[in-house]
Image (cartoon, rainbow, N blue to C red; front, side, top):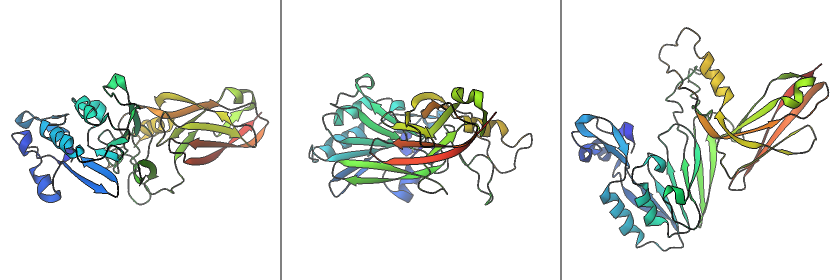
Amino acid sequence: VGNHDLNFDAPSNELSTETFKKHYGPVCFAWEYSKVHFIAINDVVWHGLAGGYHGEIPREQLDFVKNYLKMVPKDRLVVISLHIPLDDCKNAAELFHLIDDREHTVSFSAHTHVMAQIFFDEKSGWRGKNPHHHLNHATVCGCWWGGHPDERGIPHATMSDGVPNGYSIMEFEGVKYKQQFRAASRPAEDQMLIWMPEEVKQIEAASTEVLVNVYAGGSKSVVQMRVGDGSWLTMNPTLREDPHYAKLKQSEFGKTPVPGFNRLPNPSKCDHIWVGNLPRLDIGTHRVEVHTRDMYGQEFTQSRLVRVVG
């Protein structure tokens, strides 16, 4: 359950999810598949007649998690799902203290309409042996179905961090898990966007940046690039706006909005962009290839061309 699923005329938080529960079931529950234990939590607290909400896990749900985990062996994987990310949840540390004595945990959220791989450590209130992995996932609706419509009449819906709308397939095997992102209406191999000029002057090639937005990338990803059959060069992570998305935002609709379609939100800085420079190149057309290996060992390669002129 998320903030858009609430009864906005509910006088209290206790009544805010009654309609959701009537149609879909409980907002806090657990289930087991093979030896993996899943827990769903509602961390959206409605302010009642005053309007608005904030992220916080109610006491009764923390008690539910505590009691449920008493029956779960310590060598099992525990997967927690909630709507508002834990870094924006008022009492996330209380949840951490229920699971930070376990070696195998992961949590999922959404809400922000961006993709982020977050690793909580001691600074965040996590006391476990290793940082806790929290995946804040991209949305199926992207940026609330914003942007230009395509040939089918469907807006491209690219999110403010340059990630296309989509979903992920999660695979579990024992205590191991991995994410496979799928951009909507695109081939499974489409995992990144390479941004650079289509044409550069030879004298400017070595100072020309290549930016790569790895959609599901994070601090544990390794990204490299090469030109032609040249050596692989390690690219550096950077915190900045996606230039492709910034261009989409700047040019959207021109001066005449398209009726029935939402405008794009302003660009946001993201941490799944890597940067490198082209090497010195001869005049002609060159293939720039980018390779990434993620935290699960999955590897993806994409490329594009650049034309070097005198």
